[in-house]
Image (cartoon, rainbow, N blue to C red; front, side, top):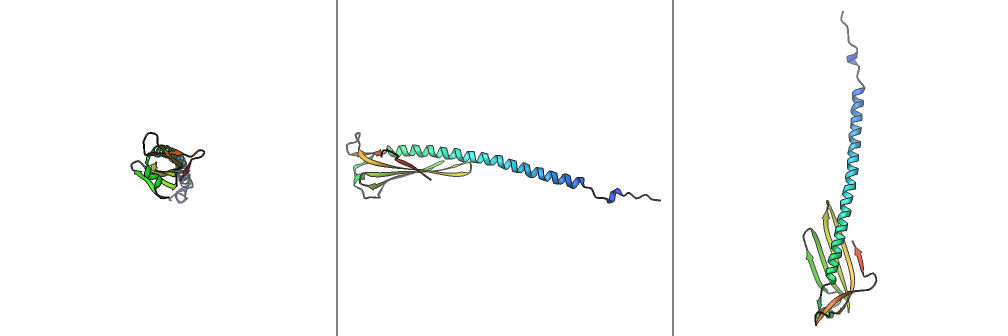
Amino acid sequence: MRATDTRSTRSGVAAPLALAVLIALALLSALFIEASLADRRAGRAALGAVRASAVAETALERGLAYRLDSAAASGPVGAVLLHAQIGGVDSVETTIRRLQPGLMEVRVRVSTRSGGFRVVVGRVAHVRLRPDSLAPYGLALQPLPGHWWVATP
């Protein structure tokens, strides 16, 4: 007589259950890793925005320190008196435009990349032309009192 083994014909439950638990744990760990990396990416983007804002403030200060000649006061309304663009890690674009007699607009736009994100920051300042005491026929820019600059995207 031959004995038959009945255990070999039954299918087990432990192996598929263990496999399902392992898959669930792998998915949860991937989710937690993605969440922790998202915080890090957001931090890098915020740091890039602060850095671009600092560069925009510096560029605006340099634009306000720019000296114009007396021909700037007689140019047509809407004329661009200065358009400077500097490339590199931070792309800085400065424009001085005449709005009306005696009133100018200084516009700065900074574009930079930080941690895989592109950050664009801008500033707009409204200024008056005044005679420059250092140059005989030169004109200096004087910011309007109050809120004289505006942050732009």
